[in-house]
Amino acid sequence: MAVLLSACALLAPPAVDPQAGSRVTCGGGPAFSIGLLAATGSAETAADPAAQALRRHLATDDIEINGLPDAGWIEAARSGSQVLYLAPEPTSEGSWHFVTVDLEGAAWDVGGWGGCALQPDVGPLFGIASFRIAPGAELGPDVTEIHVLVTERACNSGEDASGRIVNPAVVLGEERVVVTFAVRPRGGDQTCPSNPETPFVLELPEPLGDRALFDGSTVPPRDATVCPDIASCP
Image 1 (cartoon, helix red, strand yellow):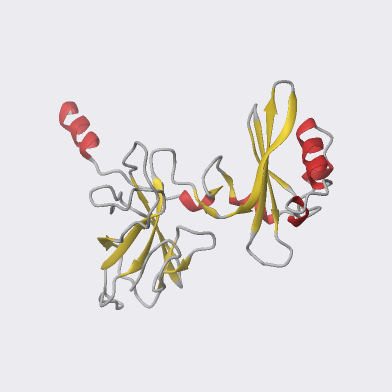
Image 2 (cartoon, rainbow, N blue to C red):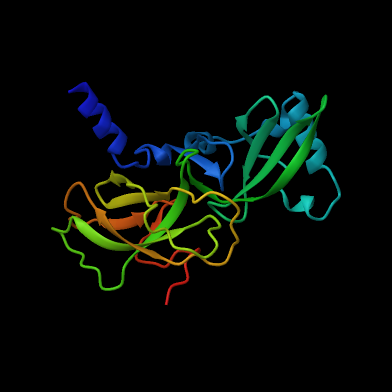
């Protein structure tokens, strides 16, 4: 019996962590709690060497760096060799900037900066994917199976995601259902033409009811009736 149970566990289909939306990344990289972003940041005022490197960077006269906020930075993630800072864009709600500070030898210095596209953390084994409701798909209060089109967000040499889509995370709310898809990467070097959409049948654990369906591949989630920015929709 134990052998049979172990075999069943090995054959169980992989799935996205149901709590994927509680931890996010800045388009990949280190994951952190989304709750950190609710606070007003002041990490640029800290006394540690990484924060000092951040302050030096923000004070530079470079025109590219001048596009970064002067204040409001949050320390989102820290390891022994890198610190990730985030700050909200003052003129665009929901938009973020990032700066990474790396330990190089005995000194901390800025390694990169730019815009940050928040996305759920689906773990190191999977890659995030977006989806939309397939044209002509049946929607209604009693529906539990919905035909959708899934688009892998990572470079995949223009191939679809057939056979690599894992069971999505489904979060049931009172007014909406948020679904987060992920795929198993193919591995190896890939080129970056647009990835085609892959048909998939989404199975909900309960009828949709009068709720809207949302794609959880972005933060905040997006309306799944609209074409994702990564897809080439007709």
